[in-house]
Amino acid sequence: MQSNLQTWQTFLAHSLVERIDEETFTEYTKILNTRCPLSGVMICDLFLSPQDARGGEHGALVYTQSPDLRVVRYIQCLLAEGLVTIPGILRALWRVSTFRTLAEDAGGDNHAKKKDRAGGKNGKETQTRKRWINSYETEETLFYRLTKHVASGSSPKDVQEITELILVCIQWMSLVVSLSAETTSMLHPTQTQEIAAQNMALGTFVIALVENAKVQRALRKGSVTKATRKELEKTLGAFITLLMQSSPQIAARLEIFRRETLVALLPVDAKEKNKDAERGGAEKEMDDILEGGLGMSLGLESMVVEDIPSMNTRAGLYVYLNSLVSVLNEVGH
Image (tube, rainbow, N blue to C red; front, side, top):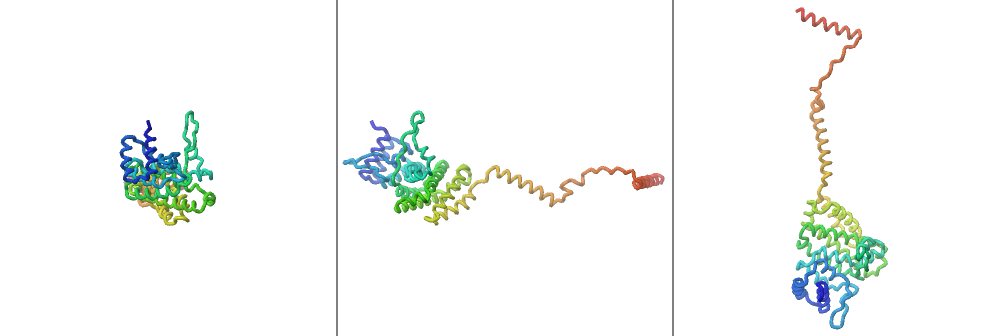
């Protein structure tokens, strides 16, 4: 008996070989989800990862060196049905992207490479996840399709999804930035053009995300952690630099968000508020002193000043005797 995952694998292979249209695919998906439910994460991994699967009458290879573009249509159907989320889609695609292989070959993604190894028993590592040889076109297409979904307001739905989207965008921007000019210069000109097109599509998606009203509200209210906000600002700076030559308009728009909108949206830290309050209180006290007069503020009028003791000098004795004479005269009168 097939497991739920195996049933979905068979369904996907059949759909791709038979080139099932979106409407039929959606109807089958509803039935399949009822009978053999599968988590959104597993569905995204299944549809977007390379598979050694064969289907069709003559055993035609379903997956080649690049994703089947029909998968993009199927992913949209799954998204419309609520079976997958945009963060799940982008995270699954990030794990198998050709960019990952390029970055690791250049030594810029070693940490992520270690995380991609599935832990076996006793902590032993298993085979590294397979990746596409050329996934640029599929990534470009998906980014544009998902941009429309975000721009329409359909996503994100809540603070959790907002945070996940920001984090996965940081992952994607960090990944494409990690490729050095030396690495890309060694590629075929066609690949270089495809990479530039993918970067432009990613930039368009990021613009749709950061200009989304729900995302900006979450940033303003501090619903997104301070560490994530700082990482977003830092990563945006590097990504904008990358886009300056290939997509100056997108870079300029993101720069406006980073320098102006993001700064205005970020809530003031509680410690900074306390420091500002302390500074404000000290400045107010100083203003009161200056405006009200030193004597009043320092209470000079109420201060008790002790009499200066008489000094044993001829002048002091003369003053003292004169005062006594004055007192005696007043008493005599």
